[in-house]
Image 1: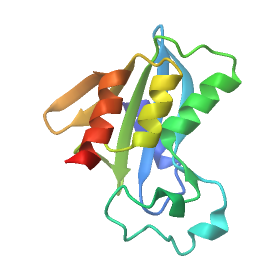
Image 2 (image 1 turned 135 degrees about the vertical axis):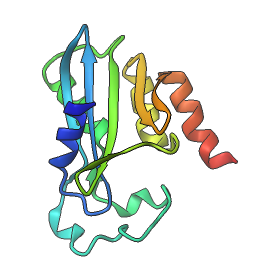
Image 3 (image 1 turned 45 degrees about the vertical axis):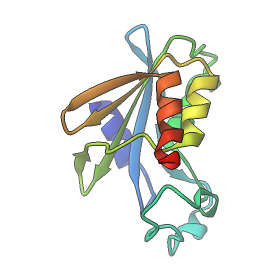
Image 4 (image 1 turned 120 degrees about the horizontal axis):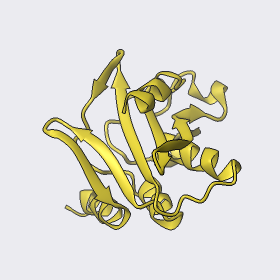
Length: 143
């Protein structure tokens, strides 16, 4: 998670600094952070005061998970059986997750064959299968 937090610090996103790493066979094969693709659309941030995971279409950033997956794929690595670690950093401090809520990333993780999605919660680390993470991300919106 320390490496994922370092990735999060690279983020240019004003709303959410997040980092992800893809790990396979004990080595990092992909790294990512929230990366705005068109910086001028982030000033001012359209979503800075949106406090839900809705209206993602208003954001021009690629998510940390997506960038980490693309990074691994660009190097020719198979993601089959890998794990992805994801963390949020705010004001230089690691913040525990409250839920799984990004259906876009959960679908991508499932589709590329990643086995586990690992997050830090207040009570410790939790590892979810890709299927569990995908289901929980949709359940978040269907409550």
